[in-house]
Amino acid sequence: MKFRDRVKGFRRVAAKELLPHPENWRTHSRHQKGALRGVLREIGFTGAVIARELEDGRLQLIDGHLRAETAGAAEVPVIVVDLNEEEARKALLSHDPLAAMAGVDDRRAAELLAAVETESNDLRQAFAKIAAQIEDPGLDPFEGKDEVDIPASYQVVIEVDGEQQQEAVYERMRSEGFNCRVLTL
Image 1 (cartoon, helix red, strand yellow):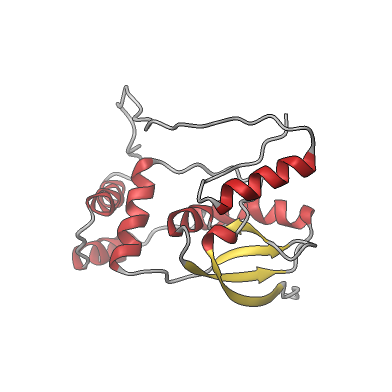
Image 2 (cartoon, helix red, strand yellow; image 1 turned 60 degrees about the vertical axis):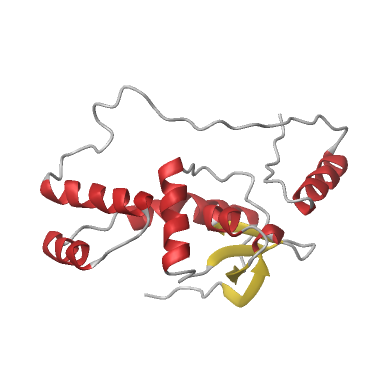
């Protein structure tokens, strides 16, 4: 099979410098955030986030939004790819679903689960869900839960006069350490 190698480089970049893709469609539960913090505490970064370089030289995330958000000001490994906006959208839409299509070797997964210990309660819960799904592949780990735990989220919406002002306000707030998203309504 022939394919193009779109990786143009590798860098270490302060996570807060990475721009989230405005069309990122993935959401992250409190449990997923906790499990990631557990992995980062116990192991650290073992892979790179993926970003494309914009015309102005800034890097826009395609994969790794939660890792970058969690890392804050710390430097993270970044694979820089040469994708235009349309290609970036395809990568953004396909990356996680392709990984989710992978099957499970129940025996190997059970052996791995038995061999791994963690200090993180959130990570332990994630491993327990894997174990439960091995026991009963039809099991929905969220079935029977009447309530959804939605953590408090405090936000401010700022109306601006155009794209340039929107970008300036966004950059200022990011430089002050706020997690920001750009919305155009």
